[in-house]
Figure 1 (cartoon, rainbow, N blue to C red):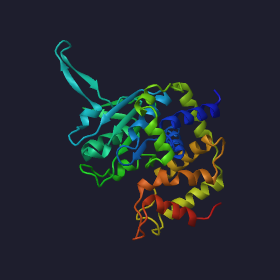
Figure 2: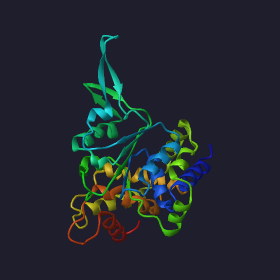
Figure 3: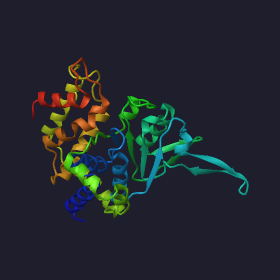
Length: 306
């Protein structure tokens, strides 16, 4: 397998579906290659669900979609045991969480109790139902979409769950040229339905192995530790990054380096992914008027390069 050729094909195919958003597409691919979960946060109608469908089809993974609503119960996700008279026993019926890609659509419309049902699955790649632990398929990705919190019927995701998403991205509105292509072109759902799978499971595992093999030199690790220390200084954020978040930054930067055709991590890779990999985990201090992502970029400008 020619890894760079495969990666280029993945990006090109996804860019035919979500037009005019190459940076966000690269972030999504980097997130999944790094083995992380993805949160897509934006207003309705900009292509969040379409992007999730396109990712699963392009990666060649078994896909399951759950529409999160206020009355969704944890058992609706994980499954339930039903008594079958013919077998004179309870038989477990797996829920939609037993898929390689779980699209949690509008995740913040479900109650906190249902949201928390995903925590074990996202961290441990397993679920415990009625006292029995069951392994989830491998690989297992959660791609969640989220509507702005000022919209009716939304609940804020708990910090513990936000911390389990490797990246959070926003698509935003398309530019004029991209929107014209959408208005005059084929329906995006029809485009997604025609997408071929570009990876086998073995090829995906090989790409993920290549991500882990990307080299991070000591000066680069010093730079990442300087950034983590800056988040904990109290100058920029109320609470700094955890060690788990630091590991996530390195994994995402390695995937970004591989997509850029390198076998080592450069400071540019860290800077490219840091807002998407960290902003959803932190709250800015003071009344600067900046959002968390803008605060991360301001911090990046203040921390010297190695």
